[in-house]
Structures are given as structure tokens and as C-alpha cells.
Length: 81
Image (cartoon, rainbow, N blue to C red; front, side, top):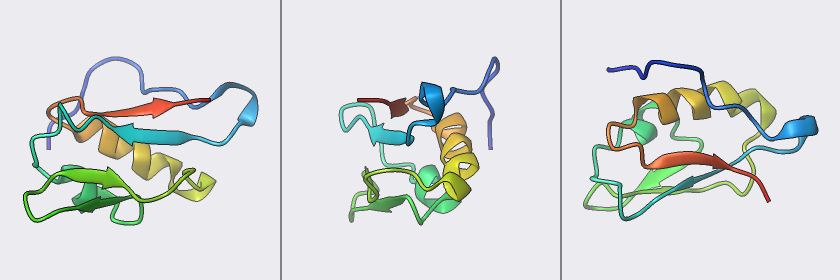
């Protein structure tokens, strides 16, 4: 799978929990995120992804970043509140 160039997205500052979101307007249903991190994503019958956790557990942050890096539509992002 393709990889993005440049730095990896950084988590929230100060050790705060990492939250991710899928932009439904950008998602085209490739389901790469689900294939890489089914613990974090679900897909509907059309392949449209949704995040199934409120906060990414620390042990899954690397998988979340891998899913972000492999989304061909750049539909997944790390958010902080």
C-alpha cells in the first residue's frame, strides 16, 4: 500500500488521549483503514468507514497512524478537543 511522504501526524500534546475521525465526504470506501486496524474502524455495506472508538488506546496509536498514512483519500485525521 502507498505511504505518504513527510512527518507522521502527531498525537495530541501533553499526553492527552488521541482521537481520530473519518471525513465521510472524503471517504471513498477503499476500507484500507479497516483492513489495517479493525479494532478502530468499521465499514458499511458500501465500504464507508467509521471510527468505532471514542479514544484510541495507547497500544493502538501506531495502527491508527498506519491507517491514516494509507488512506488514499486523506479522509482520516487525528483530532483533539
